[in-house]
Image 1 (tube, protein in one colour):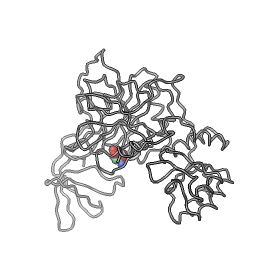
Image 2 (cartoon, rainbow, N blue to C red):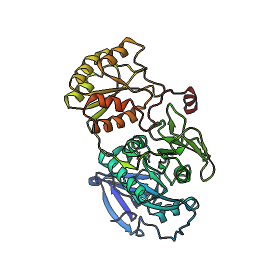
Image 3 (cartoon, rainbow, N blue to C red):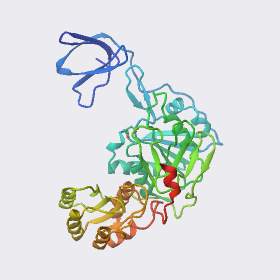
Image 4 (cartoon, helix red, strand yellow):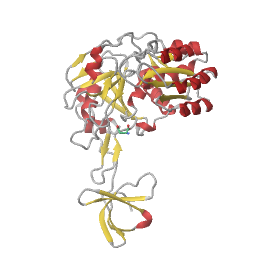
Length: 420
Ligand code: GLU
């Protein structure tokens, strides 16, 4: 039986009829969409199946349309990595499929053709919590190749859960890129009336015409389809599980506000020039961990030291503190050559390890305060730093030097008020 076939399921005395849906990843569940629209699933061994009527053949490919190339428009590549932002729905079964050929994207979001000549490529098709180091290298390589091919802007679609890890990682792996690299996601899938997919994509493609030479993230900024914010890739974080305005800049203002396919207002400074030629640098150390310190967390750290981790970001409490019960283990780790960096789980504000005795002691032991860097960015940067330097003095220098807008001298109260 094929997906979309109308089938009957007999389970004991109960009979159910509906359309066969894709199975779950275990393959042990059979699911159908009932006529009332609800989906239900059964363990295969509990039921008998009967084919009632073959469904229409389902193809995840849409018909080809002709896309005219316009000389006056920028050439923009949309690269797909997964998530709901650029997916299409088979309305019969409810299954979600990626849509990445330019024709398909233009069919989903026709406004894109007013803004740019679009080409498309699917790099990955994953939910973003599954992203791994090799995937990041693959994404960085593909972006770099498109930059070398002379594209005017690159838009990358991505699941929202780890979108800010990827933008931070790309900010270190891709240096001196002469065009905007704009990551975009969606909180609501494109089959829902409240979907933010099209508006975010349109705003991202619109922003690709600017002179911003940074890795950025473009997402809804309020509850309406009014405007998106463009955030620096190293200064942004997901703050809400489901709202469309889930992302906000931390300790800095967003770079810009983009009114869909309309006006673009810049809200803060951004990088307009780049130094040498574009560079791709993929050397990362994978044995790097991050601990949110909490009462009684000593065993977590012991485990990492015993497993040979090379670096640990401590997301401390308040100004950058960790329980005294952890201090001995931190000291042991430092003696074994592990680099410890400190960020704050307060999220907003800066780490200051000079105020309280505990903070001062940790700093004297060698824990490095990381200013106003986000924990997620600090983790990505430490992977990168340890991929390049063995000497911990060099790692410390790299971690405390601003590379891609991740560290600022002062954080303004304005951005805190703005982002809450
Ligand atoms: N967990 C999924 C992801 O981050 C959610 C889908 C989405 O946000 O696009 O990929």
